[in-house]
Image (cartoon, rainbow, N blue to C red):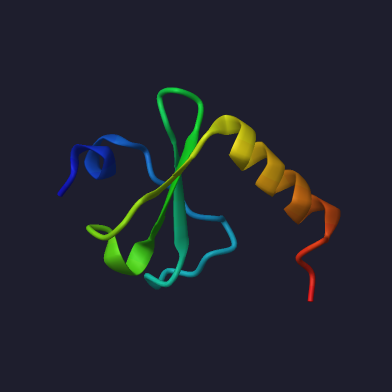
Length: 67
């Protein structure tokens, strides 16, 4: 397992169930964020800068992604 995947404090939403079908996020030391699939914790990790992450969160909060 990559050091990035084991050294970070990964978490899921409090709305997630107890099954491994969630997105996990972890804050990076530089203030960015890492994202991975809980079904494959040894798989790919997406990394976002703080600016990218904040832009994403702002769009989610605005409802732009609502169906």
